[in-house]
Length: 125
Ligand SMILES: [Zn+2]
Image (cartoon, rainbow, N blue to C red; front, side, top):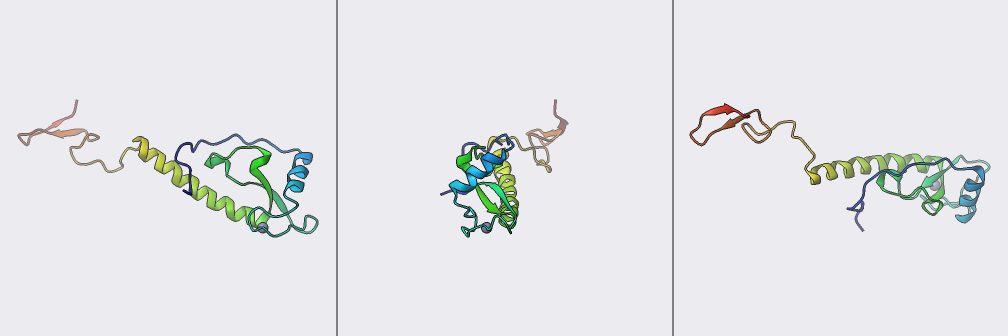
């Protein structure tokens, strides 16, 4: 399985969960952390609702895409997701040709100057 689906890397809108929704998600997962698969002690440990597939990687803001996670596990995944999202975005920019080189080729297409076949250099119109 590829790390990032090649089609859509759009970001999904994030909605706020109600306490009832949080409880429903917790009960569906039976209090098991979706990241390390260890049970979460909801009374003693801090936990968060984690998007199993990150929103910025095209995941849905739906209960099916959510599960409880230890706060520490979630922080680690969030950092990893940001890294992957940044990479996916960069790949999409490159793929679509939306990137502009910071160091254009001398007299290349992006340069202000062009070189004629006879060797003279003239400003590009
Ligand atoms: Zn965990």
